Structures are given as C-alpha cells and as structure tokens.
Image 1: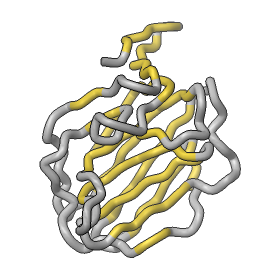
Image 2 (image 1 turned 90 degrees about the vertical axis):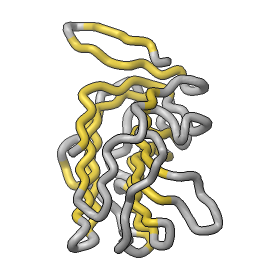
Image 3 (image 1 turned 180 degrees about the horizontal axis):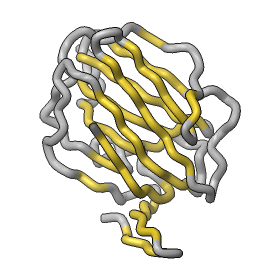
Length: 166
C-alpha cells in the first residue's frame, strides 16, 4: 500500500517503485464510450517504464483490452485497446517529465472519432499515433489501478494526487 504523505497542505500517495500500488476493484468500465483521465504526479526516476493508471488485461494472443497511462523515457504514454485493435500515443520528446517536480498528465479518448490525445501540464503534447483506433468495447474485469500494471510490474517510483476519471 502506498504511503500517505502531506506537505504544504497538499496530500499525495507515495509509491516505492517496487511493490506499492492502489487497486480500486472492477470499476469505471467505459464500454464503447469516451474517457478522460487526469492525474498529477511526481517521479524520482522518469526514465523507466512506470504505470500511472491502468485498467487493462495483460497482453495475450488476442491482445490487451482496456486503457492505460504510463511514463517511459521521460514521456507520458497513453493507450486504448479492444483486444484486437490498439491505439497508442506518446507525449513528444520536448518537454520531458522532470524528476522531483509535479506534472499534470491528461488522456482524452473520443470513441466516435477514434481520437486519442495526451496533454502534459495542460498543453497538447503528442507525437504521432501508433496503431489503429479500437472500434469494440474497452470493458474488462481487471481492477482499476494507480501506480502499477496489473499489480505485478511497472511500479511507479514517486507520488500521485488529484486523480480524476470521467
């Protein structure tokens, strides 16, 4: 379980990078609808692959189902998949996530148009999309998690606060 931390009248969950995450159960299945995720985060090492928010199955022969927001090489990576089609988008290489500073990442999925957008610190900040927009459901029985990928890997080394999903 992450450690609760409070400084300067702000609260945050602190993750140790190797074993801590938060699982909220099988909630927030979006089906074929739209999705927005917003999370404030601070890292100690933004160069490794780390999960901010995930609700997806593991990769299998049919592919993952669900949605995710990761950090990798100082960039925010977001993805949606229906088990057959996967669409991923990374934030561009500039600016990169700076360690030990608070950043806001936002992911916006518009199902009707197949548009996946990533914002970093309130600014649209994205490279070229990878893959094809899914047309099926993003619903999965996996748990919604903060700070890890399926509770077993890609643990976040840092803090999160003010998480919103709608």
